[in-house]
Length: 283
Ligand SMILES: [Ca+2]
Image (cartoon, rainbow, N blue to C red; front, top):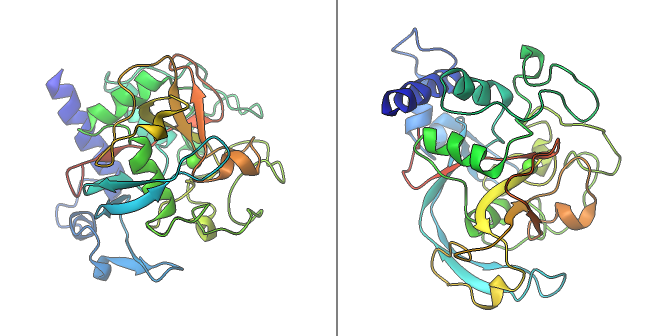
């Protein structure tokens, strides 16, 4: 099994790098360099975002939650450094995992609006993988030596350390900031289609497109007892947390502080995921 994981990691690296035939491809430098801006660009917040699909976050302290809406109380959380996927995991990447025998097929290969070949056709390669259970999402991440993000890791990555209500700040969402329920687009879009809505760290689609599994069990009152250093969520529960809302949801679920419990065995056309690694640079 370990051989399969190693091969899967190599396959995904090839997808990121656009092919493995050229060993001198200087894109390697962009992946290995983390946040060196010589291999990246400055985003609308004048933050350097590497031209790779991994974003290194230095860690630090931020205020998690809001005072009302069930995502309270606001509490100070300190996180160690981590690396997180810039995009939701896409069909082409999840297919590579299935083909090598590490991941299971999604429960449905279509999408919400009736794209019957959504998972199987290359037409939708760069669209988010959907219809995966919480465990299937975990299996994908573990296959790359990663994990699902904790709620705290996801929220800091979405809001930055200044505490905006959305990835782009406190302004209400618009049709140019995210794929969400107003106006109703009716289905997923290619990842990274709404760059004006990127988070302060340069992460795409943290609000909208597909909601995202995170690692934590859901407990409504967890913020009242959360640890302040690298909180990992309750130790038991029935539901897992999802974050960020989707193309079906309205303003309340789109907020970077919003938490929504989903049963871990359920799959949906509007539910996907991304991975994190504590190993800076990732796989
Ligand atoms: Ca999303």
